Image 1 (cartoon, rainbow, N blue to C red):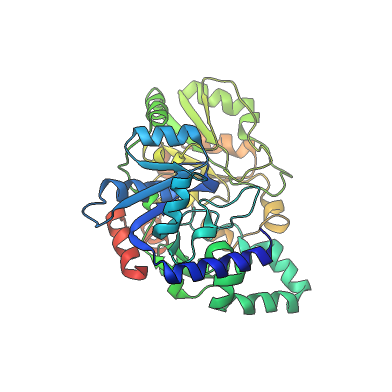
Image 2: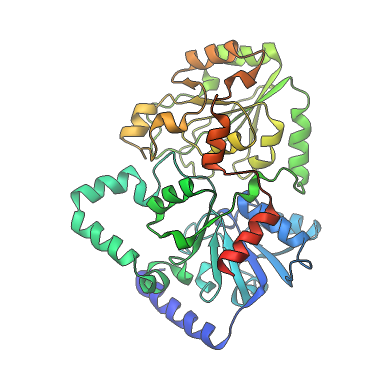
Length: 408
């Protein structure tokens, strides 16, 4: 969808909405380009679906591109449609609230979490998919900041236009998604998100993340994975973020000594590549001490059941903090990522909240040092960090109340 088509589509849809107001008792949701049932959108969707009568909602609709997912979720009692079906399009046009957690750009080949071209006139909420403050994103990415230095006039004009609500609603994105709300957690996180998206405070809902709710209705595939975790003394969850380039990255499982350590201690290494990883960062491993999950698997359901989180520049470290899990930072390409890839928004000592390893040698050393009690890895200022990033523990009921209060 080119820029002219976006403008024409938005004008037509805005006029259509003026004559056909949308129904706020109908909620339409999707996640991760329509391919996954996961993340903040999934958790909030399940809460709204299971409590829709008490909340005064008539329909809570999920849309997907996956036929298998559509059949499975329908069998679980949820209202789910294939995203391009006529039922889906009808609900896109009727739903007064459109909620996503990732992409709002309805342009092939990936597209958006929903058919965002029909979002004009709806309250648009992006729950997002990871707390800010580690890698650079959008207006805070190293790529954009470097470009801004060499093209100050062009980027200055772009940021000037970004401040115009009319530009955001009509020109920037299909469905007016340039003018949408974002979910945040605390004032600290809101300031980081403002750097990412160039928006003012009024566009951020400080409430918490639905995916941190510990009780959730599980899919059969999730029950099977959780059952497998019970057979190991300890479970280590490895979730690296995506790279624009894999330069300098070495898999921890390439070190046979680490594999031997896992086997000796009867530890299970569970790993899942990032949904945006296009470089196949994690190679296939055939070993009983390793469980590799599909990239579409919702790893948030595992966090309450693991003993340690291993990551790098991913915001899963903040999720680990929420669940009071020890975190090992494995960063073999630290210098490259900081200086030539996406860079960091915070200073490293602000987000590295556990032991740091820059080689497989150091990973092995840390595992052996803390093998009797991973909890010794927890930071001394854990509670201070928690309040700074999360504020307090919360649940979907409280989050939805704040969403309603802020924008409905």
